[in-house]
Image (tube, rainbow, N blue to C red; front, side, top):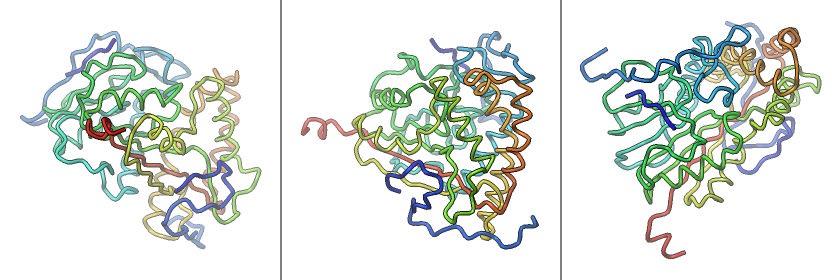
Length: 344
């Protein structure tokens, strides 16, 4: 049911210092001091009940299929997601996609969030559909963009098999019990020769130079969050498995590219320093959102216990003597053509 509103393989050891891409090691900075138009259309036509959000702990959560996505959908979270979108845009040097698309006609953005990627792709694809559990997308969008309130886990995606040229996902860790099901359904709904691409955030912290102590509170938080997510059946560490899952689903020409994203402004390089500073902001602003439902439902913590715990986590996040980073995985693969399938 849907509601329309028209590197190589790597270890999970974060301190291994393993090289993950041809990019050079990020050099730390020795200075620790911080220096509506006619072509748009409205899509607001959904049942108003889905705008009556679930309220918990001073935050709001999606009403449609309530409880299936553990993170908020309020304005603070929308602003954080949009900041992360801009961070990744710079990290990817402005590339909206890595798959070698050739005149795609129809694209889908699963878990579109605020819809920024879908809207900015409007000049590249004649027909774009963004799906999400929350109606948080803008009311006025380009005519060739539409948003659908939908649970991607459901069997019926309201589209015909073999109908899309491109299916895109971005930062959906913790959103699904088994992301392999999303890959399999995307394969089904792609045209032969069509592409799927996932741009995913790896929640594990990594460090190349041994500056991350074993008692680092932010690294401890990531492990605790991972434990909570697993107890809820919503795994976070999916990014490093995507390439293998694509291949197992039948995709060919599968590629993987891995980027490093500093957790704060510790790098010397000006662009990495800027990216780290903004990444620290989006993590800092999201720590409560990332923890509340996960720790309450997954570990049985109280809101007060969570808030007290996060005090030290925030301090650790801002420690520039720890040269830590996250990995961003970009994986894309092609559905074989009918001729290729016939030759198998």
